[in-house]
Length: 66
Image 1: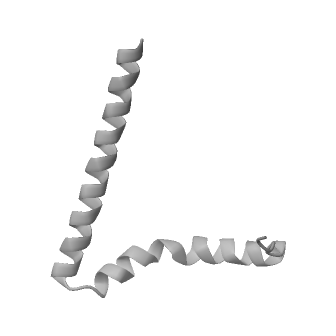
Image 2 (image 1 turned 45 degrees about the vertical axis):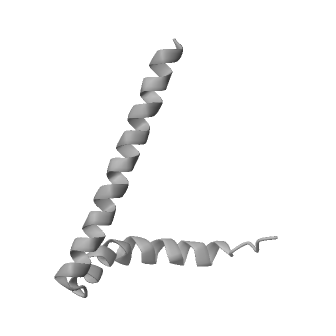
């Protein structure tokens, strides 16, 4: 069974995430080579395309069922 995190610890982690969470992508990109950035962008683009296609197919199936 999972252990519960104390509320004060959760609050601290939330504040840290809000303060520093948005820096992750920028820092990661700064530390990557151009080829690594390109590979990451390609992977993200492919994932977005798969999601769009899946969403479109769901809508198409919903229309056919009516």
